[in-house]
Image (cartoon, rainbow over all chains, first blue to last red; front, side, top):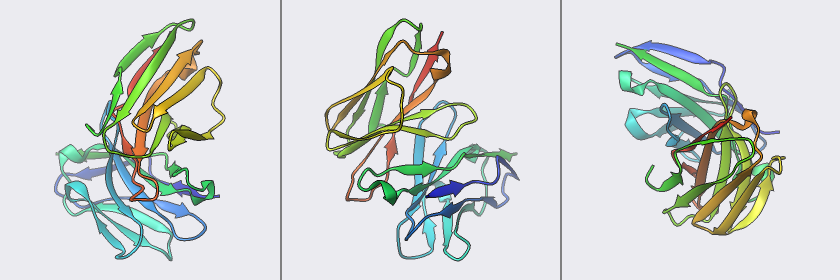
Length: 116
Length: 113
């Protein structure tokens, strides 16, 4: 069965420092991987995705993620964190087992807290 | 977020009420989704519509009834809900066969008293 795990409930980073939010996945076949961000009382906003090609994917707001097939990971990174990056981050994987329904399986989310 | 809109943004209802949540997507997509987001729980996929046909019902209680009259509109009809149904209900859309990225609306915050 397809699954995705975010091992950290919360990540704390000082402003200006690099940040990493971890995600590991388990799929059969090639994965489609996504990162979303959710600010308080808002919907999820798409940040970036990996489908194929370069393992380093660049996305919105200066975020990037590195696909690592051998470690089955897709960690989200940013070289220099901002206080405004504080939010809830979700990793997701496309579930191809459900045919054409486009079902995404989400991790439980990681709260990123960036302190000034 | 303007690509997918949801109304109302907030809703308080009693357990005997009937209400509906509305979602509209302006992205030309052909698939729409309802998710439930409760505190301390992962996002739960409720329903999927692909080309207006329901392709997934994730064991959702019958007190939730979806309707998809066309590929741009999606409704979630609510009746005789329970307090544990209080949550943020998110709508999303995507273009199946294309980029397959799901775009989310802002959600409806539902409180059942």
